[in-house]
Length: 469
Image (cartoon, rainbow, N blue to C red; front, top):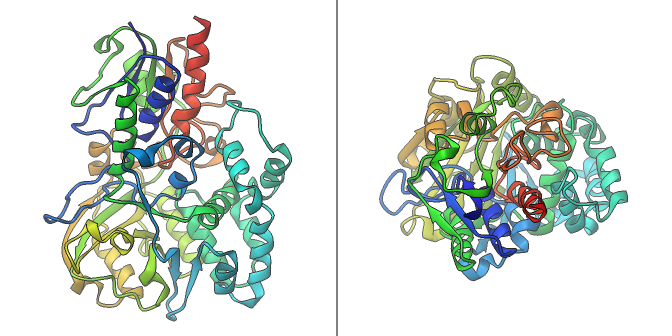
């Protein structure tokens, strides 16, 4: 009998398996797809030689993850590559705000009136970032806070809506960039704890940047898999699990799946019936004949580029995606340029480019034209660079990754109390009514992102259980 079986070979499932194997437990992972990866994969989606990330591409939370930093993933081929700028946000007048490794450079890009407020906002937390990140990403009670005073101060700033935090800025450049940071998790700007979301992304950039993985996001999953196998763990792909009886006998079963799928497989009935799924995205992967022709200079060297004319436009796009049944006319776009930092991702002189806009959950339309009109506002001539494109709406995203219910790449709405207390309001979110069944997906704290911390935290709950039996 195995000690633990993990269902789902995404970053959280693989991290949970690694953490258990490191502690001497026998572990096997079962994955329905033909390859490991979940939200961290790399494929040739458009043309030969163009290596795209179907899901996550840039990894500010990955390089800052306490779980990943504790593992020897570099020994197994993971290499972080940094663009000249972690992130840029261009404006229609040809200028841009930036999120740089340098707090000073970032503050200066906002203009004189907001430089000081921004510096005061981040500099109080940056010296304690590593401890703060571990405390913040280990919530709830998987570990006692190492620095409860700093965590409490962060909560005072971050728990109110981001619109409150943005009141300290006088001009729209800072407000717009910060609104874009919040929109990375598709949360309404006026929602609970959205200030914390934007602040975490900003601090992560200043601490270690927003890199891409050399060769693509698949490198993260492959490194975790290789390390797991060296620890004696096994990985089985092309193995769909429909019920617990499909799995070998084990003392614990750990699911890197949606709560909906877990309830169906483990026979938990309506236990997660109140779990809410959030907006989806419409995603396009491009093969380009050259770099994106940004009007502003700063985005040309940035790994990630946010596209939204101002904070009001971003807010309207988020409202349309989360509060209506239609897509925004001018979608807010998150774009990534992996080949700016990693030229191996495309043939010489060519580029890969990744973009998505927010749409309602389960939306069935085509956002291609609206997205490209938006890109042309900030990069005239963009369409002339397109060699090929691969589009994926909510249905295609859900088919590619079963955790993306209705195309929700966050595996659950990141709003209200569900932002922090997911998948249920509980001090033990990784446990289920079945004493041998646990959940470790992005539907558990600390939520979405390629960081492995949900798997890391769930593994703690599992090994405590195993040591009691």
